Length: 279
Image 1 (cartoon, rainbow, N blue to C red):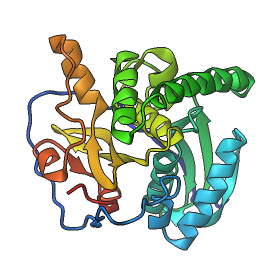
Image 2: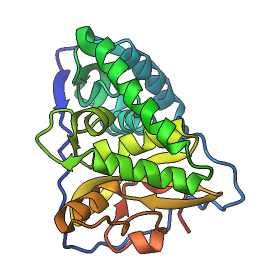
Image 3: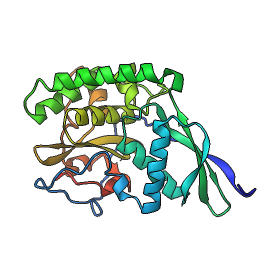
Image 4: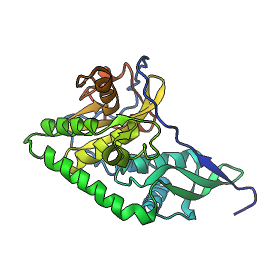
């Protein structure tokens, strides 16, 4: 590595829940998805938005995450800092099952802003991973079994929605709060954990579900798009669970809504704006 290169740390901010603000959603660059279209593969929807060099790094980093690689390793294709950010977001948005990895990472960049090396970060040690995976898989299996008592996807989805909300309270201090593991195994999370848990359990139950990032009420936020009976809907477990905890009554205010209904307080990130619309 040339001396002009340096190490920088990208820090992903914790997402907080606020209750009163309004933001309009621009739909101009959202890919329209009609009810007659086939589901887009949830495990590669963000990967397919990337360039070829970005996809190469995506595949490389995915393999490193699966192998719990903690080294500073050379990327197969150098990327700009923005390209690396999009690539890393795509990996975590596509793969909620990689719960042991942190969404923060370090990288080596040269004087021209080109990234050559990356070092991944983990919230669960490799020595503890087998036990964590066993616990994680057991919880998911129980939730899927509960959902499969129902014969239609809408009832399955509502069961999963209710179950994850009932298991959690909103908590920014949980060290694993960006992962599905926090929402499924620790009893507290933030929007990223809620959304990744919902994404993963829905997928295991055979319901297409996608992770969405953006802003809401002036803060970074995450929620889901789910496909039910051929149509796409927005779902925000975090807000409904917070409303339920505040009022004592089950809330479905943000359950299966279209983009117009969400536009009052949700705005997608540029990357998530390329996903299907909910019409």
